[in-house]
Image (cartoon, rainbow over all chains, first blue to last red):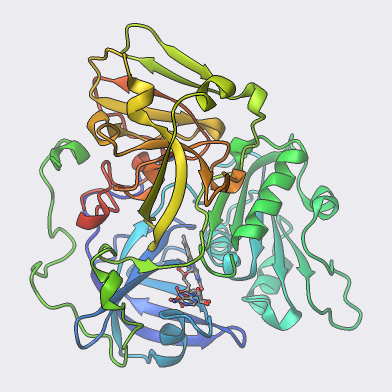
Length: 250
Length: 224
Ligand SMILES: Cc1cc2nc3c(=O)[nH]c(=O)nc-3n(C[C@H](O)[C@H](O)[C@H](O)COP(=O)(O)OP(=O)(O)OC[C@H]3O[C@@H](n4cnc5c(N)ncnc54)[C@H](O)[C@@H]3O)c2cc1C
């Protein structure tokens, strides 16, 4: 079992918004300064709590997008038009605002700096968020662990962290990027142009003999398809770790 | 629930958080929220919201076990281990139940309709000195519960949801159903349980989640 992720009690902490960056038309990255933040491992998530003036509260879970960095963490939130919490986070929050969060949570879906073999990251839509934390952590550590990211998005404009991913991969022979765009592809597109299927996985996934671990994250149907595809291709189920973003598109 | 079960040592409360418990949480400027209607609010535990969907939470790929290979067993602190094939299991008396379920990832689903075999039925005639049950599953998942949370009409091994055979992604062919605890305790793809004298943390319980998991006390994580 992975190491202990949460020690003692997870209290609600006040988190001040210090930065907001649009990523795509539907997603924004929000940077928080969290005094008392105990640190995290790439792949973990936090619970966010909002309180209305009449005391009404709503809680949701968001993956941490950033590598470990003192008391600062970043979340990347996709706006669901009819959602309760995500439109507030993407449209309403301003630098200087304070919300509550607690974490880090999850000791299972986490980057292992000692992984032996190739790490396979598979993200669908905003499911790339915890995988980005892993790619950033890997870069920050100067890790040489061979890592391949397969990222499924609707269109090229829906690819979150596009420039940073390109930059990370350009300077690093150990990091491979493979995109598939399921709705529309730009002219001259050389990546994949369909939903992840068995054939695509067979081409892109590391061979079972070299796979250290696969992290699969996204909406439930995406995760189901990828995880069962990997098992069909001969991967050991215990090496396929999944995280489902719940109701989001799932 | 004795909080001593969590770590065996007193809570290190307020270690990170200098605020007092009863202090008003900060208002999120401009947040109004989608208020609950009054009819259902007393059925929704703190921090949860009601969904009409049936989201999925699992740590790995969905196992697909053929019914010919399926069995359910009760092992551990028992005089004789018990084992049922799928046919034997399905020949046991069943119950239909309508219950509210609460997932630690924040969604609650009201009036979900299940059919299953009561754990009381499975435990009939079994003598045990164990006070804890450690359900085990295809895929290697485990969880832990006090035995008394599984008896007295509080828990089932469910094989049907909403009148249909339980789908693999929701834990089929059979899952535990323990609606009064967070839903990770309702282990999917359950294949049996080991009865034990001591409480041994299962998969999520080892990974930061609460040893008991009462949604009404919001026992999500260690120390809650
Ligand atoms: C472990 C984990 C990590 C996550 N990480 C991220 C992340 O990094 N980034 C991210 O963007 N999200 C993430 N999520 C998803 C996130 O927690 C929220 O589920 C998401 O932001 C939607 O919340 P919401 O309040 O905006 O929408 P909700 O109000 O919860 O609604 C979700 C959807 O359900 C439908 N819906 C809900 N209630 C009703 C109703 N009463 N009537 C009709 N339709 C309804 C809506 O159509 C909406 O599209 C994560 C989830 C988990 C479990």
